[in-house]
Image (cartoon, rainbow, N blue to C red; front, side):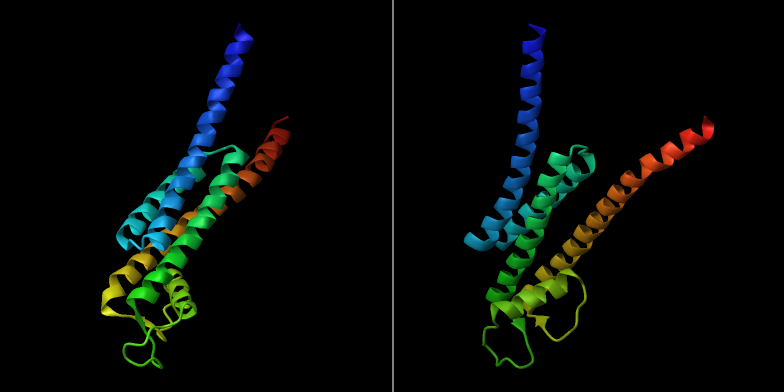
Length: 176
């Protein structure tokens, strides 16, 4: 009887773990759908922020490599969704390039370039947003700041975790 309860408990824990990964996926998927299919920029922004916080919580709480890998993949997908989706915003609503005539639409590659430059907060100044997309560009830059700082913190956490056992082993060797 105890063996059966242990198996059921193990299955429940596994189901919860898979459920958490599916939830991460649903936030990222929702952001992608709002960006690319419905072109609902406000909903895409909200879904992206929720995805960022859900994934961040999972990255720092998880100790299991299976969960970390799944969450890391979702984290990278969120990066691609926000960069690509923001490029669509700039392509549809407009950015200003010096060589473009008034009313002429820019190419998607130019919009993607502007999105990456905005995300990384480089701001070369060769392309600038129109009045209608300035707030979006500012939000993308803030999102990029938060995203990159979380990513760097997580990498440092991983590096610290990998070096911690060595320090403990050396300390215990000295005490013996």
